[in-house]
Image 1 (cartoon, rainbow, N blue to C red):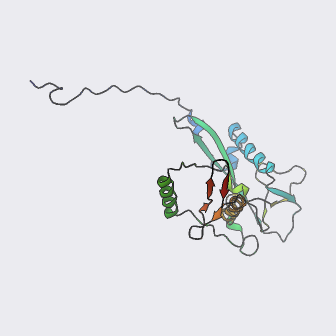
Image 2: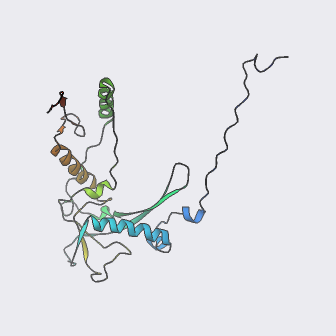
Image 3: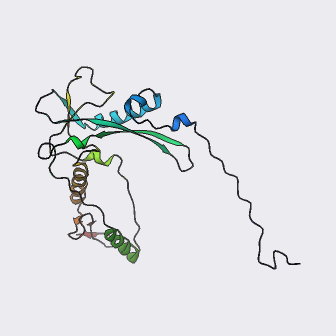
Amino acid sequence: MVTRSRNDITKPKKLTSLSASIIPSPFLHTPTCFTEAIKLPHWQQAMAEEFNALTQQHTWDLVPPNSTHNLIGSKWIFRVKLKANGTLDKYKAQLVAQGFKQQHGIDFDQTFSPVIKHATIRTVLTIAVSNKWSLRQLDVKNAFFNGTLSEVVYMKQPAGFTHPDFPTHHCKLRKSLYGLKQAPQAWFQKVSSYILSEGFDQTRLFNKLFKIIFLAGPDSGIGC
């Protein structure tokens, strides 16, 4: 008779029983349009939070309507965010501009924005490992909202949030919105100008790579 121990077979370990709270399906439903979302209190709150964030950042100015305006619309996009354990994190409503209605030479010009290449990431990781440097990662909340527009863009007031005193006024955008053709470029110009103002140098080969050299002495330092 061959036992488990002699045959190098061990008894399987009993896994710990895990459980997660189940969210009722109506609360996981994602609306496809504003008309559907406005009927549900939790989505009303999500849209209000988004609208308040935009107004606090002074994303637009309300101006009288004009027939010369190339007026674009906007759309509410909805998403249910879950935590790692599957429980509810938050209801996210995002206002997206309908950039497909923009006209070149009128409300947008340049749209190119560089992307981080894999070679750039490998270069940074190689240098960090070679010098035993620690790496830090950051995520900018609502990044595109921080981009400043150089073009004049007019947009209809968001559905559900028309100003009671100026219902026919147009939104003259000051900041960028997701959906605009120039949104990625506006954000890159904003963040790159800030990084350069902090003393970093933009590399010629990888235009999304910024570097700074600092020599640390016993009680002083030299940066270049």
